[in-house]
Amino acid sequence: MNSFSIQSFGCRVNQAEAFQWADKFQRRGLLYQKDHKKSDLILVNTCTITSRADRDVRNFIRRMHRENPDAKLVVTGCFAEKSAEELQKLPGIWKVISNLEKEALPDRLLADEVGKAQVALQPFRSRALIKIQDGCDFGCTFCIVPSVRGKSRSYTQPEILKQVRYLVEQGFKEIVLAGVHLCLYGRDLDPPLSFRDILEEISAVDGVHRLRLSSLDPRFLDLALLEHLVSNPKICPHFHLSLQHGADRIISLMGRKIGTRDYGRILEFLLRESPQAALGTDIIVGFPGETPEDFAEMSDFLENMPLTYFHVFSYSPRPGTSAATWKQVHPEYIKERAVSLRTLAKKKNLNFRQRFLDLVCEAIVIEKNESGEARVLTDNYIEVALTACLPDKKALVDIRINEVSEQTTKGVSVSLSDSVI
Image (cartoon, rainbow, N blue to C red):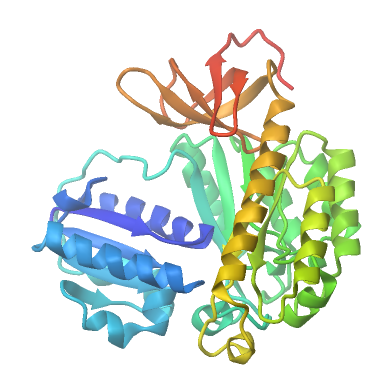
């Protein structure tokens, strides 16, 4: 094998795993190809959070086998954990690897690939991703993740800091911390650590410019941790707080054990202490038992809360979960409600982005083409299109936002002498 590509579905944890594999494969002499059709080896890191995620994986595998029949397809991740026998029957599959075997995936696949010449490293992403935790100790009635990911497991402080220092040396300006349940970080270690502990240690590493956090569980956001999140200058003002619904009765049926009142108080604190922050969440619409009154309560809650974006998912019964056995909401109602919430989400996000019109923000270059056009991401999670950009990917730039619409945000590069918000 001389080249590889990676297709990662689903969560930031999967993206962090793919990021690490890309580095290890290149250091073993394989060329990274963005185009799957040019690869000898195609790694597929799968998701199974919804039936649509399963379908996307199947369709991708079939398409890759048609377009690149000689490639070796390796499938891993949560769908592979749940449906290994089904995957092994699909055309073109070389290996199916479980989640527990993921850590050793590069060594296992490249055991015979020795003595290859070094290749020039190509960044898999413009922002570095580190998985600091995996698994979940809870049992939400709709969620299959604990059964395919296992119990919460934390990486040790030395392991994480070693990786952080390596990424700084590689020139990454932003590091994204990923975990299935970040707020559980360190509780399983001996001696135990806290999520705040590891944030402080990473922030103290020379060369770390900014940290972005993946999803946080509001049940574990006590005042001390919240104050650290808004006072640590290296933590991006972008907080994604898992909610799943906006009606207390449905939240209770989900097994989430947090009320909208407490969730709202956390949002209000973040808005007060970090008014420029992006505040986001995930919402499931059409959960079993959801009545029109429940949906109206959720819509009102989302309308009134200072959320700047939310991702809307139609409920999908997952075999083996409690909610899958309950009476389901009619698909047409789910579709109508999802459209309504997505419309609301677009309106709230547009209002948020308009607040930064004509202001100067610091952003990281996440994509740039040969003509100099670029996509950049501000620290508060606004993606901006630039018609011209001098720095390359991974670089930090100051930009002025000069156009905001429902579909896009546009801006221009500015001199470093301009003030930054």
